Length: 244
Image 1 (tube, helix red, strand yellow):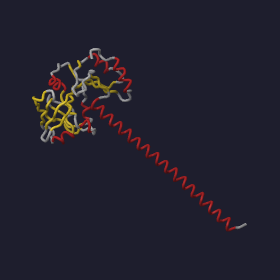
Image 2: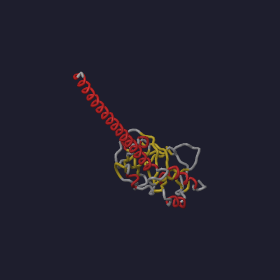
Image 3: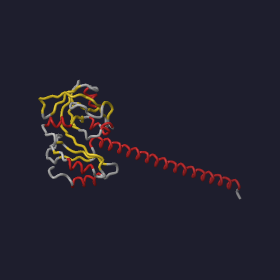
Image 4: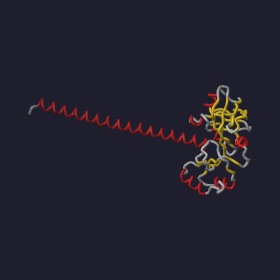
């Protein structure tokens, strides 16, 4: 037997086995790390998606009920309040609560420049906690009819601070400017919303529209967690008042 050759082969085989094991463990470790990174990425993605959905829901609800119209403008056509329908909807097991509002376009004038905005008129049926979710300064409600809550983006753009006044023009009445007072500043983190929406008193906005006190623009419905959106919308649509 060629003893040196035998020893050399054994050493080589041992080295190859050791190297193979190392490569295998490195491969397994790399795959495990990759899977962990993917899982973390998906967790962040779904967490971010969930956070966005919650912010959107807190601002505009899950389901919106408004009058069917061929007019695609921001201004809404009035519908009449229906207390019986509101009560029946509020009692459904998958409904958290129902609220109403009036939406209207306008122009907000501050110390520096102006901004085209959408006025969302809200009432006492919008929970304070819902507003508070996005509030960074001020009160989560409107004490007076001409108080408004604006976004941080608009406050910076118009160089306006808390308790200062702005001039508001309704596009339907450009010759009649109104003075409003900033009593709250919000930030959703969703720029497309923050750039245009301000919150104002619903009855005051309705009055500017010339509507009766029992008229509103639309209902917003907030579902309970876990409720199926499509199924809920289907059942709600079946029971809408015929006069709408």
